[in-house]
Amino acid sequence: MQQDSVTPAISDNKTSTALSQLLSTFELDCVKPDHYIGQSLDLGFRNLFGGHILGQALVAAGNTCDQRNAHSLHAYFIRGGDPRAPIDYNVDRIRDGNSFSVRRVTASQGGKAILILSSSFQADEAGFEHQIEMPDVPPPESLAGVASNTRPVTELISSGAKGKFTSDLAIEIRPIDPVDPYHPEKKAPVQYVWFRADGSVPDNQALQKCLLAYASDFGLLGTSMRPHGVTYYQPGMVMASLDHAMWFYRDFRIDEWLLYACESPTAGHARGLNRGNIFSRDGKLVACVAQEGLIRQLGETSGA
Image (cartoon, rainbow, N blue to C red; front, side):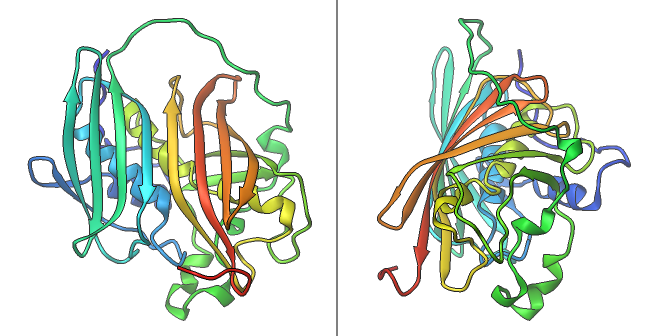
């Protein structure tokens, strides 16, 4: 099977404005071989949203490896990105073997690296299959959408970014048993979240995977905060993704409901480890995720 081109095709009029804007940023400009430029989106966070860089970096890697399917990525977030500045993506073609191709992407702004991503692509191949069962949870139709729960509160953002707080997201998110961002209670380090793109997305698995990488960074780090009764929205809390890994196993559609089953096995030294399994509505395990993040409460720890 030939890997689809990552460049989005024009989608239909069911696509939301926010999703259309996001899809347009996944159309990277090629300035020279293996060097691309992507545009940022300001979602109102302190820095450029990490999933945005992940998704675009996978686009850049896929643009140099269009005969194989992305099956994994491993990324380190080096420093916070500027949500108002473009991003440079430089791709190194590490290896093209008989079955696998490896790419390394360095994302940078102002000449400084903000992310380093390694990704692997595989020729289509049959093999053994098994998977764990999807958790039995309430369906998304029974839950309220709470897009604002993934955004900063107005006290934590500049006046120029406050309009972003109430703007639509490209990903519709419906958590099960969410934490009150203003008055969090201690809960088990487990959470389940339904999500999907807010509108139609072209039937292109390369693009679908890039969008899933983007969406996989929403809320995962918060799993490690649940047993401590704190959230990103409280003064003095600093949270940031440190690294992020994904493995893709089955085809899916990002514009259909997916269940994100997350757990945090441990936290310590101002870091929290989070793992997630992503299931399609019919119970197929389509991707697995792991992420470590900074969870620092100012005044209790020191350092930068």
